[in-house]
Image (tube, rainbow, N blue to C red; front, side, top):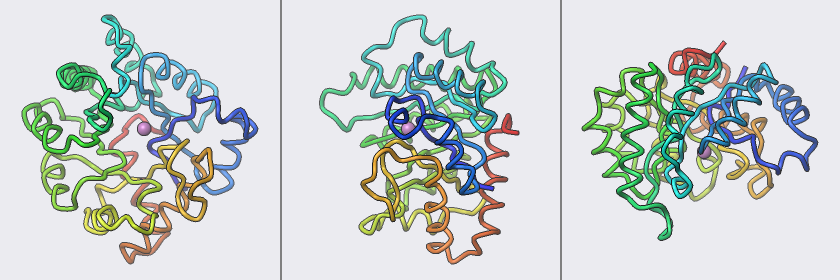
Length: 261
Ligand code: NI
């Protein structure tokens, strides 16, 4: 049994590949029986909720992605809070900082909403799923300042910073997930991180529809079924037994996302 702890299944691209029914069928044929569909604003979080009500295999996260804050409205946090109380909402996410593109939302707004969503997770007793791009130091600072809000833990999703920095995030009690990039030939840093993270803090994801893992790199859309290749590659990198590793990854997911059944 495999789990994709971070995917985006609410996009139109899946209509062209047979719809959600077939995406889930293909995933199950590869042993992927649980998928956590991540919201990135209120609308997508609501859509993820609907998917979770339609398909047993799908759970979801509710949150506002830092890159999407351009259309943030006062009142959105109230909507997210309602979603947090849904039986299949396993975390607040994805939230964090993203300074990659020049026209990304103002850093000040990103920081404010990051902290307010950490507070939301703490108040609702949920873990957080963190997105951080080109903002390593600031992400770490904010998390350290707000460590008391991380009582239910959190996940550095698609971790791409230095292997050395994993120690700082581990110190905050956080876990790490990796997807397609960990299978890419030139991904030295990421591979190094995958190798050294303690087994009980490692999780598997696809972050689909993008970043399809090897051997299907470049194929669009990526799908949860491909998490199989991510996990096979983890086993190779870490020189661990694949079946045992699968069990550990599943236990890790159930521990962090405690509403998962
Ligand atoms: Ni994502």
